[in-house]
Image 1 (cartoon, rainbow, N blue to C red):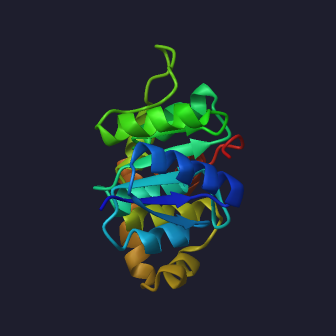
Image 2 (image 1 turned 120 degrees about the vertical axis):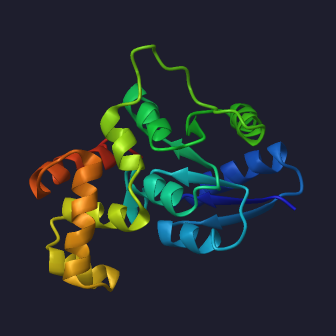
Length: 206
């Protein structure tokens, strides 16, 4: 049986997405959650597809997408967002989304997008030719789960010892990981890394 996880903090919209999934994939098991933590827990079991809102109770912006793609690379993720501007769509695809469904889409459009993704295609609104994937987004998408958590910590203004406490590791481990983060991002210091990390959070992401 196919299994789909719907992660959205709006119950009514979760129900709408679940309805689209049921039409696109009759008989599928649909698990709903309202947080990134809930999505991670759900993904502990084999999952065929994740539908992810960009604004969850414990994660706002693209950090959740990058985290799930890094931690569960074999599971396709489709972003569902109230923001459908070019920048948001482009970044979602750059960070590894298999599709992008605007919340303004009709039920039929959602179903069509899901069918396309399940067939192995990328489903997203058409983008202008100049909307290419940025090098920085590619670099961020290459971070390991640990490196991504550290980058997110930097973005939140956490000190090394605070990040070490959050992750349950030593401060020396954080420093070692930071070297890898700086190298992958092509930056020299924390300040530059924090500036790069802002790519993970668009004010328009919803």
